[in-house]
Amino acid sequence: MVYFDNAATTFPKPAAVASALREALAKYGGNPGRAGHVLSAKSAEAVFKARQKCAAFFKAEVENTVFTLNCTHALNTAIKGIAGAGTHFIISDIEHNASARPVHALSKERGITYSVARTAESDDETLRAFETLVNARTKAIVCAAASNVTGKIMPYKRIAALCKKHGICFILDAAQGAGVLPITFDDGANIICCSGHKGLYGPMGTGLMLTDGKYRLKPLIEGGTGSNSGDLNQPEELPDRFESGTVNTAGIIALGAAADFTANKGIGKIYAHEHALCRLFFGELKKNGKIKLYSDVFDETHAPIVPFNIEGMDSSKAAKLLSDAGFYLRGGLHCSYFAHKKMNTLDIGAVRFAPSVFNGKNEVLALVREINAVALKQQYPRHNQ
Amino acid sequence: MKTAVIVLKSNTEAHKAKEYLLSRKIFCAVEKISSRRGACGNGIRIYTDAARICRMLENIGIKCLDTIVESDK
Image (cartoon, rainbow over all chains, first blue to last red; front, side, top):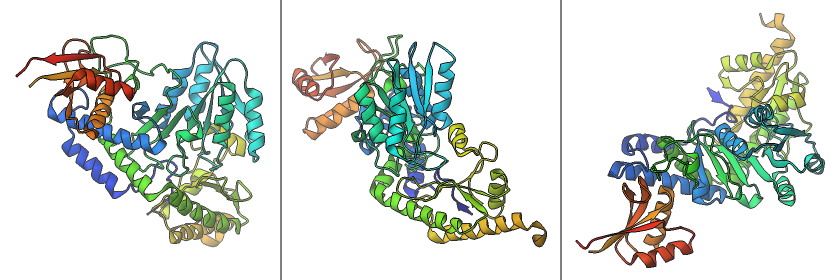
């Protein structure tokens, strides 16, 4: 089995993450921050240490580092938290449904509106597209650091500067950027949302919403936080404001180990390794005229993701045939209506190649051989019966 | 020994305060508080002058909500 679906979730996880998860289940059984007994206190301390590691990773304040279930949960918290009557949002035309659906859902109520900025190959054009949509009611721009379908990296630092210039909030969806691109609050985002289980190599069921503290957000849910329980009002202070209910203690502790792994490995090295595999993959597929690629080149403007299709074949079928041969990639629309609409692939989707730090060159070349074989069978089905 | 519990806003702040104080060789421990202001709250138990500790914490942005001084043992 060779796994290339790392844009959905990375696999395998580092040994240190698996070990931290096992240890957490065995040792940190108390509900963190709830009781005064030793087991609860130890859990709370372990969660705090994981929070510190995640905060340091993004250069955030520890109290502004909120654990969520995943990036979608983080984005919903940020988007719905900042929305008020009459709010106008701007999103891009490569957004994942994690951003697009909450904004669209809000547009059906309370007079909230949104505009979609048309991104371009040129960052200058992309910036202009965003800026022309800003109006007096614009409260936030929500944009991915990189497309989860094409891998195209957005000019997120310049979008942050644009938001600062207009006094609006920048919510950065770092699902495909965190752990691969050196994203921190130095880039200028006000809120960074990411999953813990993708580029950070943590377990599924973990995510982060990090803020610079400039915008007061309404919580998505209210409830017990283990703090100030004599008051029926939801606490104002972070992270408690957004962490009602028992947190995923074991997952969070393992996410702390994952942040260590990624930081120690080095984001630059991870990016270089995965990018080299993508360049190899792209270059090899380009030799086959029956393979459709969706950019002319694969260069430094791309995160390590390459979408492709086999001529005349639905992406789900191609992904199934590759799976039968032991190569795990994802076909379909990747929960991204906008990106596939832009690529004109809403009807057949695309197969997505997304390597991790654990993949190697030989695995990529073996996959290319299999793709070429599938393409050949598609072209000359009778010869292979 | 005279001890006090400084009530803080959250468990995260309590751990942040503890790390800061320990780095300055001031012994303390995170503690849950189940009575008085901040019922089911969080704080740090200290064994030194609470007013001085509060000033130190407030210098790094940690607000002390209350101080519960306990009698000599």
